[in-house]
Length: 226
Image (tube, rainbow, N blue to C red; front, top):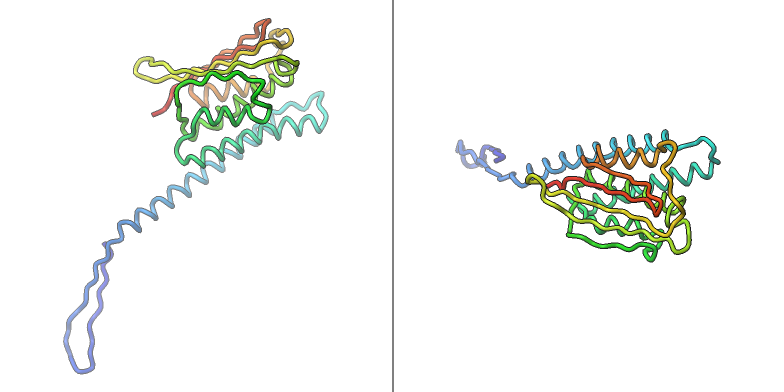
């Protein structure tokens, strides 16, 4: 409560009466607290985004690449981060996994994907960026080296959930087919490291990449935060 008081004075009256006012400012204080929280969250988000962008710029490969190739690779990853942040903010608290997947696949043409939708899964804001980066790297790799680099190549993508020790776990399966023969890479590039980092640290889960002759297979498992 906000309390204020003032003396009542009248030219024809020497009364010492005082007017006391009580104003309920609960809603105002709640609004101020919410603004403080929003400001702190915005600052935190900006700090995290800048750290991610700096990391992407520093670690995107430059050796043996032209300036245009570096630019395209960096901007592609940056766009994935920007779109993920927009989706997280639009949802305020959570983002639908199916929407994120559609957003990642749409620029390349949905006709080259076979998506088996699973149950509705809502991702917390901090999970949206790492999930978006993983999908972006998988899509980019498929178009450059994998199934989507050849006519007739196809990507199968599906997800499901399971209950494990009282925790709901999200499983995402990515499987490529009808692409060029696949062999395990001789070195780990930034793309594969980014997938691993995003899955382990960003989603607090695991990722398994299998370079099978028929095509790349990826399995991601991560807890669904309540």
